[in-house]
Length: 367
Image (cartoon, rainbow, N blue to C red; front, top):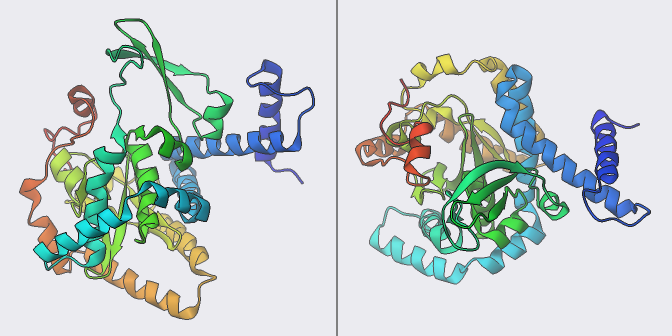
């Protein structure tokens, strides 16, 4: 029995074929059908994530379910193998060992995470905004969105930005890839591409990682620190580690929902990133707190259902320590909040763009 998604996919597949959106033989092969279905599924995934928080209860629930499915790719052995070939792991391990020697408070995982986040940008991946002209390197202006090619769609790029050079008139295409394979080829992007690929790299170096989604249009990552007994913030766009109040205090960003996802479960981590959580409650109006907790608990239950009892017990103990951190009951939380005055405004992006988003440090976040 076909699902509504299957029916929509078939309609869109027929539409693409009728419009000649991509070269194809006279007879459609089964593989072609599956390829296009995969492309369309990724496009629907992106639409759910981008617009879910605008549709209230069902929208946020849909976002949770979508993001839960997305993290499976970070455990894909083929992707991890490719990623390991891109990462200078021996070099990063040497840097981590040197960091441990200079700072005895760092465990191996903390030191490796620090080395990784400092290497990722700009050595490997680069921020791209504004878009330079690919012909003359001149400035460009946004000209809206373009039609994705078949290759764009296979790379998960349901959206393609168009930018026209103000000097030579050349139009530059910027596909917003979602597939890590394509990101490892392009090696440029904005926060979405950064967090997506960095989540894979965290796993590739042997760290446990999470993908963190923020309802106010930003994403980043976390890794687990056995020494600190908690999940630790990392933002590869900003070369930042363990700066949970960076967005609230440093950027001045007003936040509401901040959710973390891994193959071990999902968690509301908003308290870790919002200084005055009570003041933010008025912005948390997409779903009741009880319903949100229930939705995340159900994701976690399903994720852990096939684990053995010992591993589930270990994760539950970690959950208890993480809950203490979120409530501000640990020394780790106290030490991180004591460094608030040193948190900078957003580094990535143009001054105009940061000001328009309220992330230039000239606004008050939680209030």
